[in-house]
Image (cartoon, rainbow, N blue to C red; front, side, top):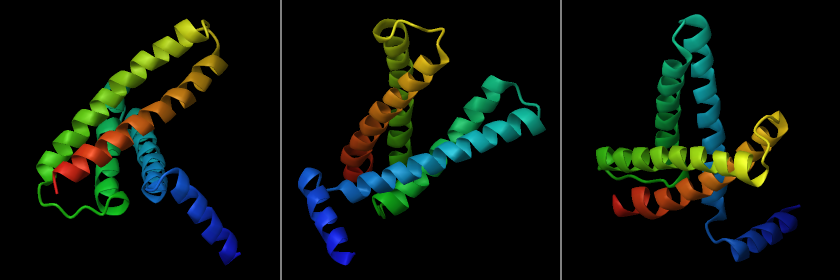
Length: 149
């Protein structure tokens, strides 16, 4: 079993040297999304907050969780320039959000040309989420947690 793991590690390193960071970032992204969704549910259903306000608040909490765990777990960054890193991370997250909105329109309305289909919307969301993840990971790796060391 250990030999299989070593071979898999060698193969992954051959494809992408920092694949372990990519996997960690993906795990953090899933955690942050679950936190976002949990707080959205709490704000909307238990605190009776308007759903768009609840979404904005829960998104900020999820983004903060993502920042903390990407800084400490994914990139193991010990910089004291946390305010610059958080600003950079936030700008990237906001542009990722805008990219997501734009790509959702492109895929749902232009590529698949079927905005009434829930399946098309969800398939588009999966595609767009992957693109957004790669975009944010690349920028945070090369800017947020590299420049502000």
